[in-house]
Image 1 (cartoon, rainbow, N blue to C red):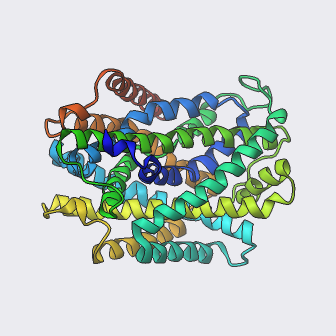
Image 2 (cartoon, rainbow, N blue to C red; image 1 turned 180 degrees about the vertical axis):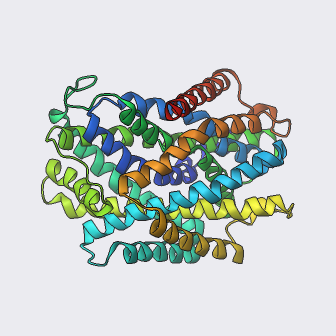
Length: 427
């Protein structure tokens, strides 16, 4: 374990990028809305979603560290249909995801900086800024910037949460929360769908794990001992990010419950309006002085979310198409070359078109995107498990014991909830 014992902090990177990607729409928007509307009534949903999805997400980083190839290559080894399904979800559902995240980021930009541009031009500015950042900086700069922004928001959120605790109604399901009917269940679906992120985003973790090796910050494993060390480091890095996202999800729910729900504040149905309410959560607990500081931190984290999602999705699309065409070394060329730039620009244009043609309302748009993730979750959980059990994965890296049983239980739980959702919709 020599590799693992030196420079543990130096190994952190892909896991924090995962956290930066997750702590966006699912946390800033959905968790806060859950607390604002239901108090602590949906705390169990947030915890269950994070627990149920853990094995599938972990397998993304674990597979890349153990095999030296992306999860996309693993899907192709399972068969052509899994790869095509993954690509279809990336090109459809994640196109909406980029649009949703850009919308929230633009709303935050207007609320925090007082940008007077209409919403659509502001979204264009956000997407252009993200595209330029990724085109010029790529992985190394993305990783470093993400660490700083995540640190700022984490400190501010933990502090604000502690100060908001006295105002929280600690009832299991407060009397002031709406009745748990079909409408409430549909919100639960939307909340769990992106909590902490869609499971197919585990592919991004595998891509970032390999990208870190290309920067020279990580050594490619050679031999069993080195491979064990690489897997250990990748899982430890992922765990730091994943536990952090779970804690912050609960914090945002507590802020929503302690500040908004206790005061009877109804979440706004516009991105700028909700962003302003979010900043008010902090200023109401930390004091007016904190509004610009926390507003800047929240804005930068939303930009980080937009940037990480765009980077991960761009890499995933480039590698997916290369893998489909059996292009050699498809797993190591996702962050370089013209294809990356072309796909990145195309995603920005697609996001603008989707927002222009399909956005009927802020909450409805976010709920649509997150509900799609809820339905596909059991499929990707099963495929990730199947990939990890292949003979091409070294024996020492395959799921065993508790994590294997955990994975089986997660697949079953996610499938049952997806079927219940479809049954309710069909009634």
